[in-house]
Image (cartoon, rainbow, N blue to C red; front, side):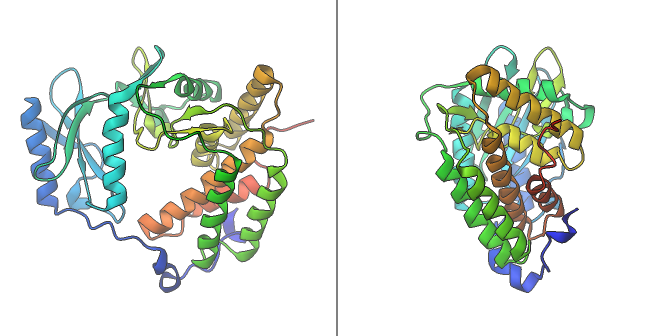
Length: 325
């Protein structure tokens, strides 16, 4: 459990890490949703989760269903914060450039506008989120492989995250998490020590595409083909374990046997494909995901995420690695 890893969280100490998202006024957001529906010639239905009147700190966008077939949704940006603006613009570019393989569907952008605040109309996923219906570990790994086979026409994001990128994206968040008392100093030292130990075993590979936010609530099943949503964070990476690590950190605390099975499948596939033991790659990627998830909760939600810290502790204790012997 996270009790040994959790710091003595104090809002006054932690607030220097909080980010202000300066949310748009709810009436402007709803007006944008109505404008989008009019442009699409559809009727605006209910929000898919919460609407702008139930906004929470750190919200980036809101989504409404539209009437008619084929299914479409309206997405409206929630804030003018520059990081979110960049991610919004990147998302539009990525969705227009994605060329998924035949066993995966991704949304297309049908309409987009900026008045009274930015909005877009995209395809609605067919089926139900697999977070609700369940998805086996082997099936989840098939989604990871489908992402790696997806093409991005005309878009390239550098040479791919390498071991140094991962180490930096562990080291810097951990320092901030310790400073904000989200995790204890001892936990911070354990994380950095574990990364240092596994750096020697990391095997860098030719870069592959990674969704970078792969979770069961973004994967829809039940139709002829699986759908995968929310591609704005897509990157190229060289450890080949980023999306596997994201799935494990997102769901492993509540589904530990599933997480171990997913890790086993991914590591065995890497060995069969290239003869490489990527255990250290997976450990480093999981630590990067868990630290990043905890920091995102701190900065955006202004909270101490026990789920993320639980996942961090589980990675440190080796609980998500496949059982041997």
